[in-house]
Image 1 (cartoon, each protein chain N blue to C red):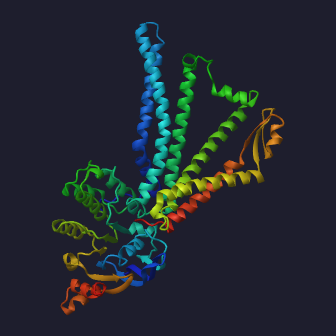
Image 2: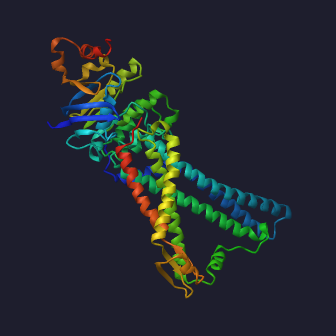
Image 3: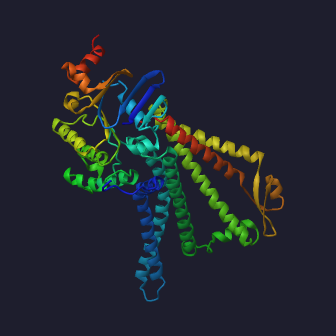
Length: 235
Length: 295
């Protein structure tokens, strides 16, 4: 299988502050990858580079063989941490908007999921609760038949019941053969779904391995995470 | 794939969605203008009849005058609302969290920017045209009764400027020149606004983006004017309306064509602005692609 993500000697700095330093890794398609690291580790910068939001970096980044740009953006379904929909839009407007730009978007499925999620079609985003907005964004992402799903903290700031709902929605609607790259702090809640993980700390790649290899010793990913990053907290 | 849609032209989709995003508010002003014109038309039509009472005629006159004042007011507001949307939509859709959606669409930054320039440049031109036409038409219509003047004609004023009745070619050339100049001016305005907002969102200026964008706007506008003056000094390309009702083009100084009391329209400033707009477009697009940092 070809590499869905290929990163070579990736570095990125903001002025004198280095956020990614000579990071290299590859992933084959069809996996669920956990992107793990504490706050300020460089996860968000890496995600911004992979999704084409940041373009001034050194090194090489390829998404299914394409540099971040128009083609790669048509292959990637991105769920940012922020609410990115225009507040004047209704749920239907948002679905039509995404359908206009992504040829792989399944509009019929989106309309059906809106009913399942109990999202009123004509309700404006600005009058929706945060939970409803998150459901709508999740729906818009998971109704694409994308090759790569990049999900930035999809369960950040939601209650445990909502976490289960989000996780179930992602797993149920993920097309066969697609890849998911998910950044999260909540390792315990999701570690069983990962096939591989990548750990980043202070801008450097600290670990990249399959979950099968990591857990051979009997440790959980959460244990490994604590071991790897405990040095950051031991003064 | 089941249920997926056919491939669409992404640039057309950008134009469509930028238009829809702006039309939801701007179009309300056009609807208000159409309604006021309707009221004005009905009042003018009924007021001309012989069978109406003096009291009713007086009410019609009041309604007509109110509709005239409101029409001019609404068309004037339209310019401000359009201006507000040029700034607001650009900032909101690209540099607020909405930017996470806009910048991950499968389009280039040239297309993102081009769509906004076309849609908002078009709205600016249309809003200005609506204001001018509303003002000229209504003032012209009511000049006799309201101001007590002889009917003022815009065309007559232009003819007075030209000294003698011009040829059809000259009138067409004049109108084309005016439309193109307004188009270039609005394009320049939009491109300077977009450049200022974009530059103010690079990491270095991000903390003070509002102040930075205002300062950059005025500095860039001054640079535009300075370059156009300099270019005009070097090569003053002029379209001259000759006495023999013909048009001629040439590189002339104002003293050369004013000696013969001829009307000359300077082409160089418009051309300079157009070239600067193109440079500004690609500079903005580059900064947007390479240097902008979304929070």
